[in-house]
Length: 203
Image 1 (cartoon, one colour):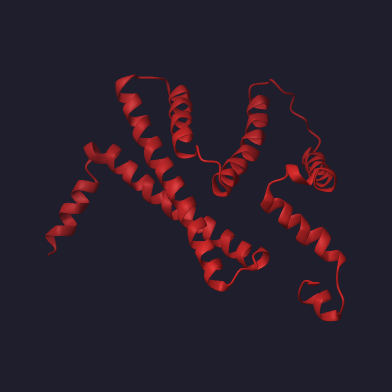
Image 2: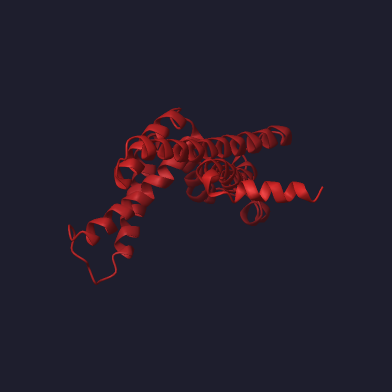
């Protein structure tokens, strides 16, 4: 039996197998990471914001976790596979190869507009906005400002989101609206010390 692990390790460490095995490991990494991130998030959502019976909450947690893990795992697997094919067949430069392959796979994997895909894309959007700003400074397209700009950025984000919530609530993502209701509306209602300190007031 001791020869089996040796054979497996030989296959895994064979350089000629690296590209293929990297796509499989990418699938595994995407599934594990997606499950870890979404499971914790879904548990919090189910506890704080959902009022269904426990079995429905559990199904919600499992469904959200499954979708996030599946989509992220498939994206990593397909992206790495397509990137390897494009590199070997077309010889496109690394920047264009990354952009084109991710564009194609992103359209295929994330084409459905659902809450999981929307949250993933909005998460990425927020970070690429910051990334673009840093890239623009790196290329000297934007001046490097010595004074801290994060406080102004934070102030602008909070100002816009509260303006939208107070005046145009229908434009916000439902999960964000629920969070805002919990923070700003539920804090306006109570009838006793119990639902003032320990639980929300229910009329």
